[in-house]
Amino acid sequence: MKHPPFHVSLAPDTGLSIEPTRNLVETCSPFQHIAIEQSATFGRLYRLDGDLMASEADEFIIHESLAHIPALAHPAPRSALILGGGDGATARELLKHPSLERIVVAELDAEVVRLVGQFIPTLPALAFTSPRVHLQIGDAAASLRQHHARGERFDLILFDLTASDNPACAHLHHEEFIRLCAASLNAGGIIHVQLGSPFYQPVQTAALWQHMRSVFTGLCPTLISVPSYGGPWLLARATADTGTDPAPTILNARLSERGITGLRHYNPDLHHACQALPNHISQLLA
Image (cartoon, rainbow, N blue to C red):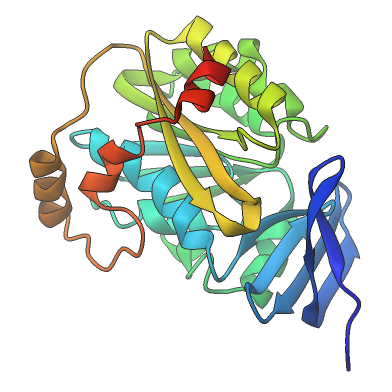
C-alpha cells in the first residue's frame, strides 16, 4: 500500500517531502500532535506538530554531538540536566560517561517518552531503566527552578528541545531562562544549546546566539550537518569562563579512560574542526 508523502517545513516556502512506507502511530497528547512513521531513507522517525525531531538513520549525528562535545570538554562531569530529551537518545549517550552519577531528563510530554520507547526503541536504548537517569515530566523551566531553589547545580545542561519558535518551548530560549541556566551550573559547568539552521532559520539562530553572548563570556559554536534537519545545523557551547578546549590528545585520552568506543559521528579532531565557520555564518552570528 502506497502512503501519501508528508511535508516537513524547513522555511515558510521550503521543506522535505518524505514518503512513508508505514504509518506507525498518529495521536494528539495534551500538548502536541505526535506522529511516528517509517521511510526507506530515514528508517523510523517521529514528528511533533509536524516538525521532524529524530530519525533512526541520522539521529546519532545530533545526539553524539549534543552529548559528547560538552561531556568530554569537562574533566569529570558528575551531574547533567537535559531539557526536553524525551526520546532518551541524549541520555543514552551521556550514560557512556561513567563519572555521571545523575542525569535528569526534564520532558514536557510523557506520551513522547512512551511512544518513542515503544516504536523506536533504538533511540532510548533502555536509558530510562538506568538508575542514573531520572525522568521528570513537566515544564522544563519549572523543573529547573525547583532544582535551583533546592540548591542543586549541574555540570552539564543540554537543550534537546523543539525549535525555539515553538510555543511549547519558546520561553526556554529567552535570555531570562538562559541566565537561570547559567546560575544553575557548578564551577566549570557547560551549557550546550541547539541554535538551529543558519540557512533556513537565520533570524532565530542569530537571536539565540546573541542571548547567550549577553550571558556567557565563553561561547563556542559547533557546525554539523544533519540530513533530516535540512543540512547545516548550529550548536553553541557556553561556559562562565574563557578557558580553551582540551587538545585532541586529551580528548582521546578521556575517551579511552571512560571506555567510550563505537561512536559513529563524534571524534576529537571533529570536536575542534566543527568550530571553524564559513564566513557567511560568522557574519550572521556577529
